Amino acid sequence: MEEAICRPTSKRIAVVTGANKGIGLEIVKQLASNGVMVLLTARDVKRGTEAVEKLKESGFSDVVFHQLDVADTSSIASLADFIKTQFGKLDILVNNAAILGIIVDLQHLDSSTKESMEQSGA
Ligand SMILES: NC(=O)c1ccc[n+]([C@@H]2O[C@H](COP(=O)([O-])OP(=O)(O)OC[C@H]3O[C@@H](n4cnc5c(N)ncnc54)[C@H](OP(=O)(O)O)[C@@H]3O)[C@@H](O)[C@H]2O)c1
Image 1 (tube, rainbow, N blue to C red):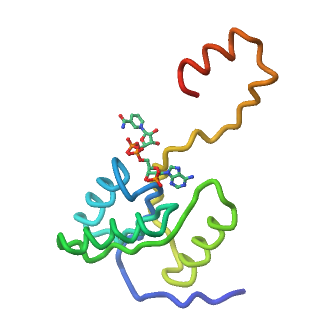
Image 2 (cartoon, rainbow, N blue to C red):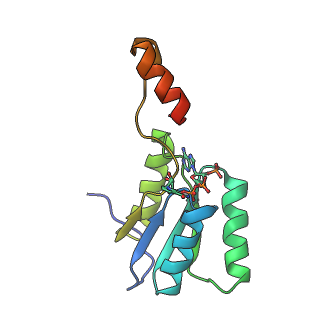
């Protein structure tokens, strides 16, 4: 069995996906304000690190950045490894990233369904 090289912390550990802006960023603030160590994740390293830097400037110390594209399995595996080695646990997952999570094959839908899906932005 692999050993975890854990940071000694009694804090709860949270991951927030798509957290460089919007609702995800606000959730990071709320969790960090309530004594939770938060992994702010974003698919874009620049946008993510800038978000963490701004939070630190505003006094949020327990926020750490890690890259995560929720549509990329190697990125997911990399984050999982990081959590395992750094913390050895995960208490809270907020899967906020704005991604549909399903793949729609528009070619195989009938024309009326296709039209209504395109109009709704799906
Ligand atoms: N705002 C609303 O009124 C509302 C209402 C109902 C539900 N929601 C849901 O709440 C969530 C957040 O909404 P929001 O308004 O805060 O959205 P937002 O401002 O558009 O932010 C979406 C976040 O998701 C990230 N993201 C997109 N694809 C990703 C991927 N493949 N991997 C990782 N991150 C990814 C974006 O990163 P980039 O900056 O790199 O694009 C961004 O950080 C969404 O799931 C949305 O569907 C929102």
